[in-house]
Image (cartoon, rainbow, N blue to C red; front, side, top):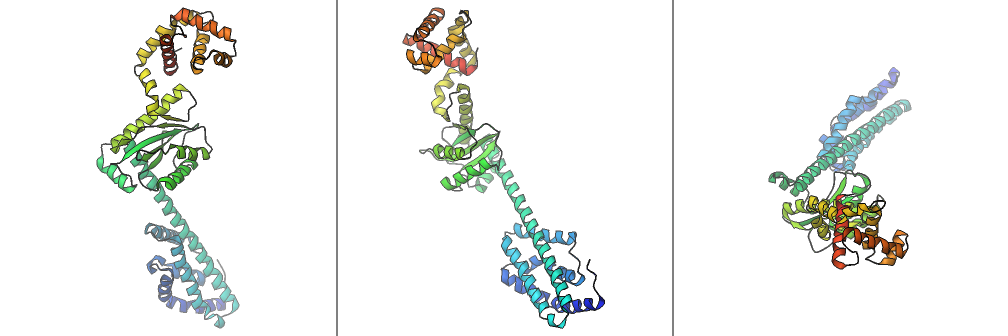
Length: 391
């Protein structure tokens, strides 16, 4: 608290009294300057004048009132610059009234009033900004929550049509349109509002605008619902992900489908594709549902697939040292399209050693890798073995 002499206080009161009388006019002029309503000033001028008169700083409870004023301005859609302009205009107009009587008071009184008044104005501006930002953060959190609910409803196939329609209208999503889903996974779990999500949002906004596209994280993966058919958004999408520097990335792409049911189906296909490609372990970045259909057929009945693997490859366990080296030989041989020299190089063996192993496989299984039909059976068994994890 500032201690003043009695005569100094008399001079301070003489400076402030006319400003109290003109406060209403100051408010009206400030509102005209800023183009917003004077009621948003609340008790600002009386509070500032009291601070200037007493020399005391505004209390926390008073500043909390102005913080709520900042929140109210944000909720009314008033720009922060406009609300600050209102208060600053009121401040300098108020000071101009006080300064017009400065020649009738001592320098000490004028300086004391100016210091207290502008310190109070500074504190109020900070409180306004804090409240405004608080309202903005709350709005962002609410928007994120509503977006999350819509994504969960959309991908989960909710039966609440009203909720789905409301979310679609809010986020400009055409429920009746054709969409396909892309699911992306990297080495760590992803979260909403992270840097990767921000980069993807920027790519989507630049490529598609703000309509009919959804990007969100779900179960640690990035899920994007793209509109339409007849074009492929994946190339640009992969480039945006790789720029985030969080790779390696693996993407599963579902087929296009119409309506909410089409989105649900495409999402399921994208996830299944991503999981199946991980089991294949081929190092592929983008896997598409339709391209993996043969592998899906192969393991559609895993019990039957396991029975086939045992029937075709089980006898290899009788080989000296077990059958693992013989299965690895088959895997390399198929990977090299049956080229003997390439298989030998891959296994770091001589061509003769590879030939011996292939002949041994034929003798133990009854299927010769050199015969087309037998080779087909062996490759099916090897592929199924890798997919279902049979030893």
